[in-house]
Length: 112
Image (tube, rainbow, N blue to C red):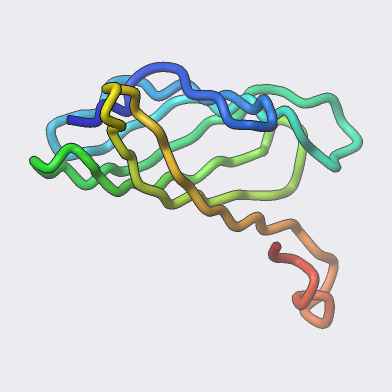
């Protein structure tokens, strides 16, 4: 079964650490992004999430990252864990990033 606990790294060099997943599928950890448009130095950011626990070894999950340490934005990730024939676990994710804007009329450019 896919185990989200531990360190993960993506193709851009961003890394996350997931602490233990509890019996309900809830987890927390830190995200260390390698990419940012923020003007402040990048720092590790807290994440919280939930994993759908099932028996087919290929669970779905989602988590939120609060970039509060260096930015006024929040990101959400959703994905699925796949276990390859070699036994290696691979996370496939999609994400949305919401940046703070100064007015409702600027809302159109706040999410990417």
